[in-house]
Image 1 (tube, chains in turn purple, yellow):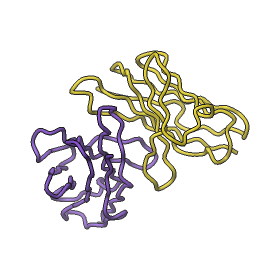
Image 2 (image 1 turned 90 degrees about the vertical axis):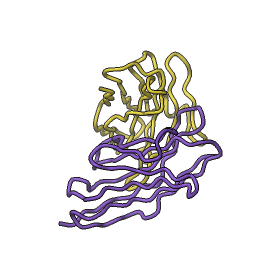
Image 3 (image 1 turned 180 degrees about the horizontal axis):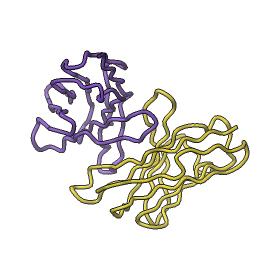
Length: 113
Length: 117
């Protein structure tokens, strides 16, 4: 069965600093992995996805993630945090062929001025 | 492209009444839509998978008679919370699967906040 674990419910960085949000997955088959961002009282917006092509995936708003099979990880990074990046971030894995998504518990990113 | 809307964005209803939430894919046809529930400061919990023209598939522990899902067209799925109770108060989010690009992506609506008094 697939699952995702997000380490750190809260991450705080200074504006301009590196952002690193951690996601580890468990899957018995090659996974499809996603990162979504949620702003307060809004739905989710897709940041990026891994679908077995390039292991380094670039997304919107300067975010990228690297799929590391040996570490079963799919961490999200951004070189320089912006105040507007403050939001909740969810890692998700697709369940088999059903297209259902299983979400991690989420990480709230706080950006300090 | 790939825009999903929900209506209403927020609703307050009295205990014992029913409320319907609509989820529409505005610029694509979605054979599959999903309904999620999100409690404050928590992750999304998948409630059910809505397939156009067939019965919804509910996740374990979700009462299908309480959360009625109808997917009558390729652009519209509805979730009806029947005989609502205060514990049904939550943020309900729908998503629609984009059938192209391998169908991997889900596009999410903005959510509906339900408060039952």
